Image (cartoon, rainbow, N blue to C red; front, side, top):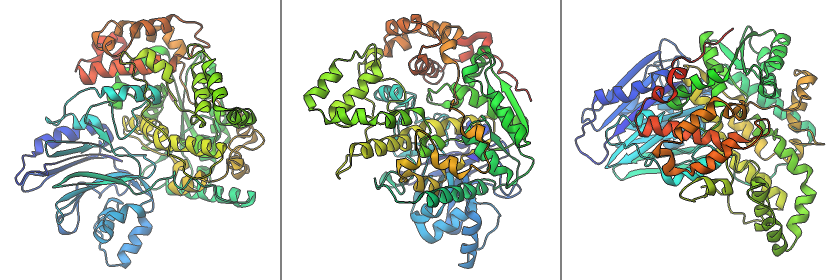
Length: 639
């Protein structure tokens, strides 16, 4: 795992790219690659690449930028899990390798197959390749979106990097708020791609590739899980057997490397499945857990300990208080670059640092299992009440509109939004929005712009209403929530501690199979993740499979009733926050109700994140001035 940056002055015959600039950009990513560094500037100074390395595969070789045939140059972030098979095939075709790393495979594949090389790669990746013969930069991001790729194009200069902070070091890149993205940010807790919250800086969508040449930047998709919108057919036995085979293969592939591997363990089904599969393939691995002492509803350490004891792992845990969370805030703001307004970022930062402190460079995590197997309670709730929704959809449109009009958006904003979807004849995707509703956004934003910035694909065939809802939901999860929120948070906060995170449940082959597996295999008889539970029933304890899903969370409601609320009130005095938000509306929320039932995370946490982001990244002010002594030291992990 690594950090990459680059500059291409494509509109000039003689450039001004300097090694000093590239080094400055590169070294903002030192946390992504503390084990090595490299830089390359072309003779005409139009092009420059730089790289920071976290050594996982071929510890002695694999330095980047790496050079190939005819002046090709590559910077690569990620892991190619099928590189041994690709290498064998390439050697059979006459390729000669100088290293034992996966990076060189990309160079040889591109030399023989051009852009279509990405379709042969299985793994997580973001890379840029200088093709000297064609005078262009070729770049790509993995199918699911596990690794980030940010870029901007200004005045004939193309700048890219693994994180936005690297781009901001280039003198042509301005630090300006993308105000049109505020509504979508509040709706989704992250800015949906290709936009970011920085004006003029973009993220390459998952499964996309692009070029920068003399005519500018062009981008296209090469892979998508969302098409076609068709269910596959399978028997119970076929589905269960195939799911187990694919999970075994995925975990085995993600053991690739020359360093120890651990697991982020919650004690729930997903992480326990990884531990159980890993025990059959590796020995002596470590597990890591985070919890919140005194907040039982979000503290899973007891369950994690039970799993660790049963599978005899080398177990470590860390507990966080509200003071600890406040001390972590400056680290969150720095490593996020743009707000990822999910409070789970706090415990995720702490548990990844715990792995680093125990000398584990690679961790496996359960991200994506709830999306591919339909594990969320909201999914089950919709299916259990589907006869009611179907009856509402069958009503005349005027009656559906009247039902939606009769619900107060102030008292029941999510129910109101759900009924408005029914009134339109197409239910909103489950979890859409994952953040604030349109009513909440319109009341909070001074611009009154409640646009969510995302909508599902138009349906042209004769889908029934449930099929449309199911595919719309999966399209939202794989288009926005997974790649730009869940996967970016684990990328940011694993790499913040120089740890590489791998997600076995999101292997593209597994995703492609499960995406079109009918809903009955995902939720059956009220049992979520039915196919997964059947597939691993011989290795996962019954108590884990039958346990009610708790979810990875943080006690934000209680925090905002305490010091986090005081911090937000202080920030509400700043003109910057008042420019964008109705602070009177925020104050009413801060005063409202019982923290045990108060859904503050959906409104107050995104605003707090934005305020701190604006202060640090837009205004350029140190967060220590805002947070005081509480920000000086992040808490130490305990084994």
